[in-house]
Image (cartoon, rainbow, N blue to C red; front, side, top):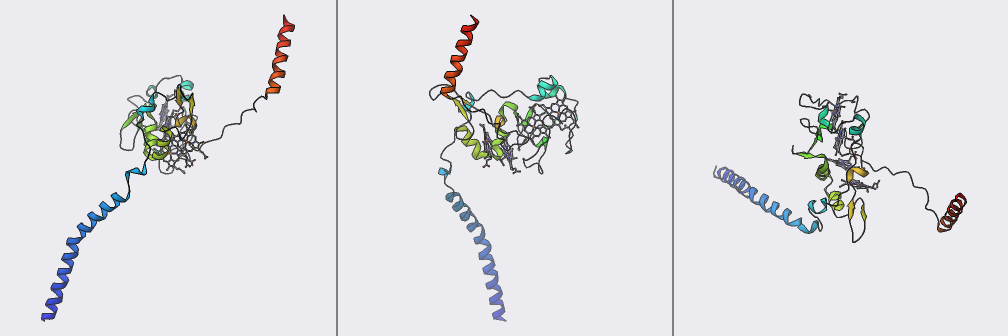
Length: 212
Ligand code: HEC
Ligand code: HEC
Ligand code: HEC
Ligand code: HEC
């Protein structure tokens, strides 16, 4: 009898000890993981404000040119009832943007990026709205590392002079948000060799001399 009481109370004591120690180990465990991920992991980052003045002008929206409008709201006005149903879109979006593919498209659709209430705005995951010209804040949410590299001029392309005006090309100028894998462009014709250039120049000179 005493033995049973003893083992029962021992059991209870052990359970209590375990219960009490649990949150303790949990917090120390957590603190250790924070320590294990040092801040130095990101040796470079800069606020996007620093490069804003160097950003290239954005391409004009194709749909604005084709439809001769200057805002999405000209069709998607306050009476527009957004239809969140995933579907093949008809005019005008059968052409622009066309399909939404190769961008985790099984799990997402238009209104995950475009605001349903204000079609002139993009929508972050937390519901915040941003202007089209700040589209890169959308990309930042999921492609943080590349976004940082882009701000540092490592990913993408900057043009201009080492001591003069720099220009950063936009993500959206190389990647279509609706089908983002980079498509290689048609190769340019080979550069003109100096020898050929001289030939062309002398031909041009003799032609203009003949005209006189
Ligand atoms: C010329 C009119 C017109 C313009 C301009 C226009 N849209 Fe649309 N949009 C439509 C029509 C019509 C549909 C419905 C098509 C269908 O259901 O097949 C639609 C549907 C959509 C949808 C699908 C969700 C919904 O509400 O049905 C999205 C997203 C969308 N438009 C975004 C845009 C964005 C972003 C712009 C501006 C960059 C824009 N549209 C400009 C006419 C327009
Ligand atoms: C991953 C986010 C994302 C999704 C999903 C998405 N868009 Fe977009 N869309 C953008 C961004 C960013 C821009 C503006 C930058 C650019 O030019 O790509 C844009 C631009 C547009 C434009 C203007 C393009 C032009 O050149 O005229 C239209 C229209 C549009 N989206 C409609 C849609 C429709 C319709 C869908 C669903 C079939 C859709 N978008 C899905 C991010 C998205
Ligand atoms: C909500 C998360 C999310 C957002 C926002 C997002 N992406 Fe993506 N992106 C993904 C995922 C997931 C993939 C991988 C898709 C796949 O492999 O099918 C991807 C793929 C890509 C790729 C293709 C990589 C390859 O395979 O070559 C590019 C380029 C890209 N995204 C650019 C962008 C740009 C530019 C924006 C901003 C306009 C953006 N993404 C916004 C999640 C996102
Ligand atoms: C000057 C053109 C250019 C610009 C600007 C640009 N990219 Fe890229 N991006 C590329 C090329 C080229 C690749 C490599 C494609 C390949 O290897 O097939 C690439 C690859 C990617 C990938 C796939 C990376 C991987 O590891 O597979 C993602 C995601 C991406 N870019 C997102 C972005 C985002 C987000 C921005 C803007 C912050 C951006 N890119 C700006 C040209 C560009």
